[in-house]
Length: 421
Image 1 (cartoon, rainbow, N blue to C red):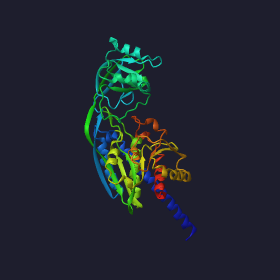
Image 2: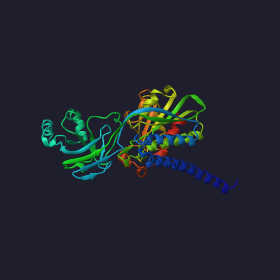
Image 3: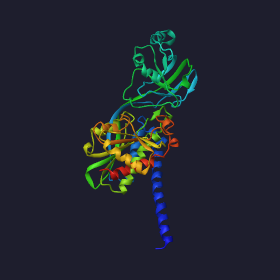
Image 4: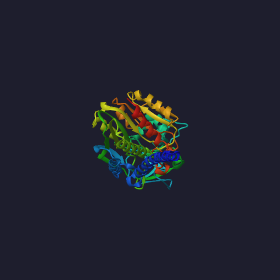
């Protein structure tokens, strides 16, 4: 064999490797783009976006070549906002998702209301209560910086009750304004509106038209794909949540490209990899719904597992990796600590990230449902990169997504599975 032929073969192998890696990234981006498109309306519940996304993922797992795909149904109660969403501050129209949003457990609200601005620098609870009893502030909206109300909960919580004189609250939060779903399983007595300081500064009156709709026993499902290994006595599990925040009014939706189309796309491409490279153990790839509604999908699975939890060698929960922080954040269960040294060893050898920053275990994603049940697991989330500021805002779009973390996360997980015993 001539030197020229050998060089040609090496170049062909080199470019084939690049092509393979590039194709994986192309597939990954396609899934993120699809899931964050207007077709799924933020993968929420009011317009059935979450379930439409689940059906799409079911097809994607089949296309990936897995051995089996099943959907695990469950129900949840959730408050939604897909109707009217209008607000004016002293006559100036505010933009939903940009200037204001709703606390997830708020009722709807209609009318014009005076605004009472809490003096946080010279705060006097007795004076505030006396002011709220004055005729000009009856049925007002109390405007206050959110964390101040949190620190003085003993003063502000009574104002949330029906008998208190105010109509509701304006929680001041810096731009970009956020939206949540975690505690939307109920509706409270009074509305709470998140609003930017710029939108509310010096405002005397608020006019508002907001509809809410409470969905009782809304039907969701987890999408579970399986790649059979050579052994069936143990398994690895890869999880990501595919639901997101849905709508804020009729026109605004939360695309959720980073949170969590990024993680969902990763487990689909991992499924495709293991479908082509038969693993030693069975592999399960679970796309959870209901995560943004307080981990409802993973809790249901953990209580109704299709494989005994004690057979899980290790579980990887991939959430919000559409970013570019060179330091990878992670959390482990107590049982998962047994594998963390291997993660660090692999990362130190391969330099996938500058470091792995292990934080304290928290109920912030679906791994928690398994960690509390003694399953060895790790949570991978690329925090504090350039895309992180868009977390739970309308700006978490495909255009703002960053794809730097996908390949190093993929390879770190793959290498761990190859070496873990």
